[in-house]
Length: 162
Figure 1 (cartoon, rainbow, N blue to C red):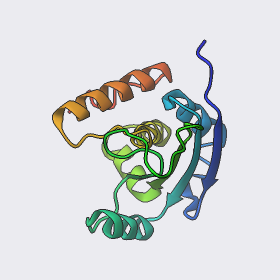
Figure 2: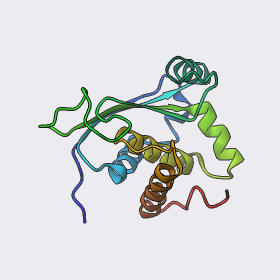
Figure 3: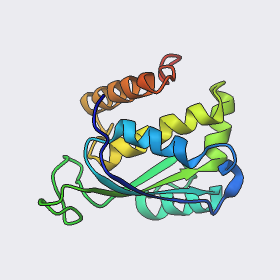
Figure 4: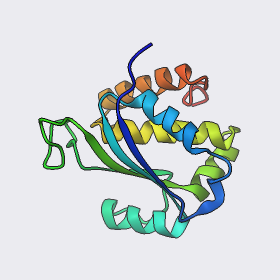
């Protein structure tokens, strides 16, 4: 069995609607499955107003989105940035999940909230490590990793119905 990377995790629920649906041990398991290095992460479950505000302020997109990742350790090319010390190699990021959008998408995609949350957590953790889907090559690589990780976790391919 692969060794788990060290994980310091803070989970915040300013929007508490998923607090009793998705447990902290589940979140840790999903994160660990996607980690390639030690990490210090904050997962924050927000409402649509906060999700929209963050998306607007940081991405110039005026709508609430399902997941946002603010990585302090890798730039878009996966290179070390000011937020990561070359000696410690620790991934540092805030991952914001919009509970309202997440729940709506789960219904639309005919998935459980837990299954969709697992996918978005894995997606956010990969972003924190420098993966992106800005071009076809990056999207194919990231989606492939998501599919593999979710399969190990016992979930189906989230892209199968596209």
